[in-house]
Each structure stands twice: as C-alpha cells, then as structure tokens.
Amino acid sequence: MQMKYKSTRGKAAEVLAAQAIVKGIAEDGGLFVPEAIPAFSDADFSAMINEDYRTRAERIFAMYLTDFTAEEIKDCVNKAYSAEKFGSDNAAPLHKLDDDKYILELWHGPTCAFKDMALQILPHLLTKSMKKTGVDKQVVILVATSGDTGKAALEGFCDVEGTKIMVFFPNDGVSNIQKLQMVTQKGGNVNVMSVLGNFDDAQNGVKQIFGDKNFADKIAEKGYQLSSANSINWGRLLPQIVYYVSAYCDMVKMGDITFGEKINVCVPTGNFGNILAAWYARAMGLPINKLICASNENNVLTDFIKTGVYDRNRSFKTTISPSMDILISSNLERLLYNLSDSTTVAEYMQQLKESGKYEVSESIRNAVTEVFEAGYVNDVDTKAEIKKIWDKYGYLIDTHTAVACAVNKKFSGDIKTIIASTANPFKFNGSVLEALVGEVDTKDEFEISDKLSEMTKTKVPASLAELKTKTPRFDDCCKKEDMEKRVEEFLV
Ligand SMILES: *Cc1c(COP(=O)(O)O)cnc(C)c1O
Image (cartoon, rainbow, N blue to C red; front, side, top):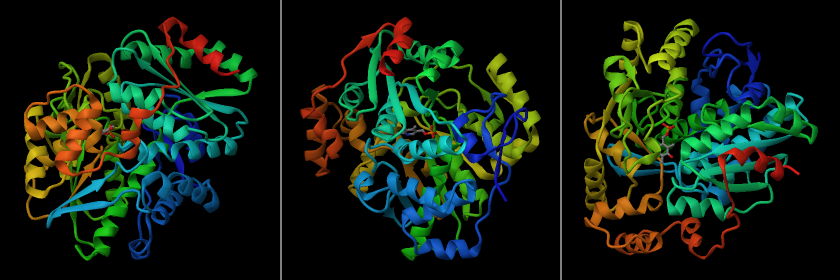
C-alpha cells in the first residue's frame, strides 16, 4: 500500500511522497500531510534499540516514503548523515545533564545548528523525487534568508548533482558571522548575493520570482525548474521525527529507562516544525508524556496553547534567540489538521489571513492541552539560565537551548525529559559570553569566541573558527528590482 499525502485544506488532489516533496506546498495553499500516521510495532522498537542512527532513519523514512525503494532511501540517508558531515556516526547524540535532564544535541552538522538535520537530506530526497515524478530538469533553489536557513541550505545543496542554489540576504539584516558563513560558501553550483534593503525586500523579491510564469517558461527552455527549501516541505519535517525516536532508543540502550517508560520532550520553538516532529513521533507510538513548547517573548504559541486563541496582532520583539522570533508558526496548521479536519483548518487559516487571529473549538483546545504544555522566558532569564547550567554542570548551551531549559523547569516533576538543543553555543557567542561574564568588551566575533573558549575550555567548532582565514567568494550586491535578472545570469 502506497502512502498518500493530502492537503491540510482539503482542496487539492492526493499525491505520493515524491510529488509532495517536489511541490512543497499544495495547490490550495495547504500543507501536505500523510493520510494516516504509521505506527511502530514492538518489533520495530526492539530492532531500533540496537541500530545506529542511519539505520533507524532508514526504517522511519520507509514508513512514510513508500514510493521510494530501500536503496534510494539508504543512499539519501548515507549521503546526509555521514560521520564526515556530523562528526560521528550518531548525528544527534544525547548529553545527560543529570538523572532527569537529557540534552539532545542537534547541532553537530556543518553549520552548527539544527536546520542541518533536515537540510542535509532534503536535496537528496528532492533530486530523487524529481526523477520519480518525471521531471528531467535541474532544480534551482532560491532562498531569501535573515539568518541560519540560508547557510544550512547552501551546505545541504553544495555540489549535489542536478541542483543549483542561489541565496539572497539583506545587506542590513544578518550578523557578521552569518554573512561570513554565506559569502565564503564553497561549491560549483552555489551563488550568494546581498540585496539592498531589509529581509522583507529580499523575501518579496524571491516571492515575485516564484510567481512569474514568464520567467518559469524562460528558464524551463534552458532546462531549469525553480523550487524552494522551505520549512513547510514534508521533506524537511520527516527527517526531524527520526532524532526523537533515536534519542529514546539511546536512553533505553543506556539502561536509563525501560522500554515503554514515558518521557517529556521540551523544544525551543519558532515555526513549530521541530516540536511537530516530536508530536508525530508520539503519534507513531513513541512513549512521550508531554510536549513542552518553549518560546521567547514572541510568545504567540504560549498564548495559543494556554487559551486556544492564536493572535499574531502584537509587536514583534527582537531577542537574543533570533531563530525563534516568529509570529506566524506555519507548521501549526499540520497539528490543527490532525486534531480536526480540512474544512476547519481552511476556515482558521482564512481568519488568520484576514484578521491575524483565530480561536479553535473546545474539542481542539482540549486535544492540544492533553499533549502540550507551554511557557516563555525573556532575555534576562535566558541569560541567567545559561549561567546556571554552566555553573552547575560545566556544560555550555546557546540562547535557544537556554529558553527550553528555563521553560522546562516550570514543568519538571520526576519525569525524564529530553531537551532539544538547536544551536552550538559558539553560534550565538556574544550573548552566551555576556551571560557568563556580564559585559563583553569587544565586538570582534573571533575575539569573543576565543574568550568564551578559553574561559569554558570548550572548543570552537572548526567550521566557525576557520571563517577567520577564509576569503569571501561572493561580494555582489543588487537592487531588489534586479534579483530576477541576477538569477537568470546565474543560470547560463
Ligand atoms: C529554526 C530554529 C529554531 C526553531 O525551530 P522551529 O522548527 O522553527 O520551531 C530554534 N532554534 C534554532 C537555533 C533554530 O535555528
């Protein structure tokens, strides 16, 4: 039996996984969801406990990508989660803080943040999906980025056969390190360019190109087709289910829990993708008690989970955990679908579009609170948490992970909890050092990292340290009206 994918808004045809991945978003504007959630058998679990990360990944992928062969899945997984790319054979290792807190380190990939877990494999899933669906064109990925996604996408697509990638970033809107990471990107199929303006200018420019039918026709003649590496693509969500299952299996294997024992999972949340993957793992039968949704002061999800009202009409706050500075959490739509139906989801999304707000029914609200807890912390408490964890355990965490640790405290009973750690602390070195010493007397990123490293005897990840000596490959800047032309020039 082939697994079909439906739109959360119910007005698009059902497709197989390969088409869902190629399309990214359904024609009715909805998100693709599997028609039924597969369940783990006891035999699956007893096998997985003794398997390595990649084998566990293959098993879980096979349950959802029924139109892929076992060899195709294996090839994708091996290319993505190699020891070369993730530093060891376990792409997502657990660090035990104490008897009831386990940090799931999701930042061992090439860019030191959790986006790598999905973006290292998406290019391989996508190129195989295109072949399967009869698309014989080269895929061109366009990204507008304000931060981590651009670099993670560049690393993921770098030199992947049959693909090209072009990333636009706002010339006033990314940190120095983030810019350096992008403009020094290697690879024969990549291009990076800054856009005069802010993130919205870059984002609108990319959206315009995607909406231009003439442009699509023009590049099709040259053998190209546009696609996006967007976080709503099913091909980005699926890989994230794996590490929760894998972490649980590791805990059983270590003898820290007996199989069947329930744990909590706490996730620093922005777009709701990472925590939704944990929800899928739970729905598949992973023994999870509560999912704890941790936010910074952009606490739209805290309010939603506590009150059933989603209201984006509030001021946007810039925080020290910038990857969670989000007011529209797109992946929430998938949860709503799973707790109701496509008619209801389409209605809520219409209300969100028109008034920035919707209130879910009592039955959805009850279903949400049965599984989710939620809380948020401000920047001061986030920094205090970094210091507390360092003082107590000698373990360094980044600002996003700190949000999760601080929120988790409000719910900790004696139940063991996996806390998702989404970035290496050196990626947010300034705020982390400030948390430890109070004031930082330099603005030089490399000096900050050296200080932090010296003080904590923690190694700066090689990929960040080597930025200091790398020469930029890309220094072009364009006006937003010229973005399309620049893409065309890239596709010779
Ligand atoms: C993207 C990101 C998040 C938020 O994850 P979502 O899946 O969008 O909820 C949290 N922390 C870091 C470091 C990220 O890059």
